[in-house]
Amino acid sequence: MFGSIYVGLSGMTAYSRGLQQVSNNVANMNSSGFKGSTVSFTDLYALNPQDGSNAGGNGGNGVSVGDPRVDMRQGELRQTERDLDLAVDGNGFMMLVDGDRILYTRTGSFEANRDGHIVLAGTDYRLAMLDTEGRPVSLSIDNARTSPPTKTTKVKFDGNLSYTGETSGATDTSFTINDVKVYDAGGGQHVWKVQFDEKSARGPREWDVTITDAKGTVIGTQVLKFSVGGTVDPTTSSLTFAKDDLSVALDFSGSVTSFSAGTVQSLRAASVDGRGAGTLATVTVNDKGQIELGYSNGDKKSLAAVAIAQFREPQKLEQRSGGLFVNNGADQPTLLASDDERVGRVVSRRLEASNVDLAKEFGELILIQRGFQASSQIVSASNDMIQQLFGIRGQG
Image (cartoon, rainbow, N blue to C red; front, side, top):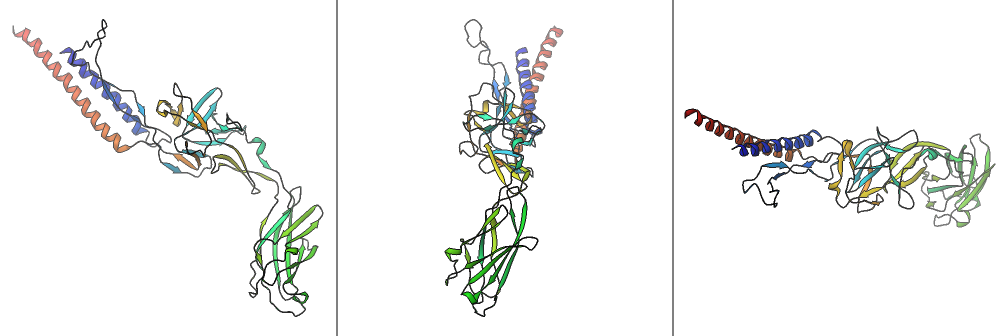
């Protein structure tokens, strides 16, 4: 009978610990990156120390809680507003470097620290990236906080220049594109005005192209010609204008046309190369999983790809606070780039939610409660039987 009490107590102890696991899962249902653990119970049988046979007979010696098995299913990827809120859309893990220690995470809010390293917010854990030889390194963006200026060499146009088709000997049509911004080698901005004047008296579809600067000074005038079919004459498809150290080609070789369509003009400066100096404006991760820097001048620069670790048995990773994992005895990971289909990809402005299934946890809660209740009844019934045994001696 005393053995029955110990068996019942083992059940109460096991179900109490199982309740603790369920409680931890439910309490972390809103913790980013948290992975729930599965509750399991195992039966106990004692062995004879002499020969290793079953010393407990067929009755058993109770129950214990099995080792928790972490559920590594991916949680929901929730939208955020921060560029460095990162998550892995797939089965890989981002690698974090803390001195000689390596940690892993599925998601996290990152930031650039004072040294320019990308770190997990509130920690010194640096986000690892792959160098040219595929090794994990922590890179600093301090040397890339500015974007150097580049000189403008080309302005590309597209659209239509409508002509009148008359030969009156005077300027029939005039069209102006204002605020064309070009840059010198030092990043200085110059605002040019491009004026198109039709000269039908000189021939069909001929235009004078005149460039003036912000002060109204004429930089130059050249002739733009179109064929009868409305396409640009190849001999005038590129017109070069120079001032000081600037030499800019106006490129009309693309989709520029000239059709008789009244006074509506659709010609525009579609693109201008060159830019002024820029300062760092954004740090994010692009579609290839690379750290991408955006600058105030519109320039973008891609650094190394985020290192993604793949484990054969991720369940063997040890879960820590803050959605972190450590590799204690699991297999050594394979490091791959973010866009490799075997590990998925790193996505920006996303955080992975907990994968706890609340309905499943409540079902486990009911079973654990019933198991604890039944085990306590075993202890109570055994105690009653012992009391009756003591009573027999008193009656004698």
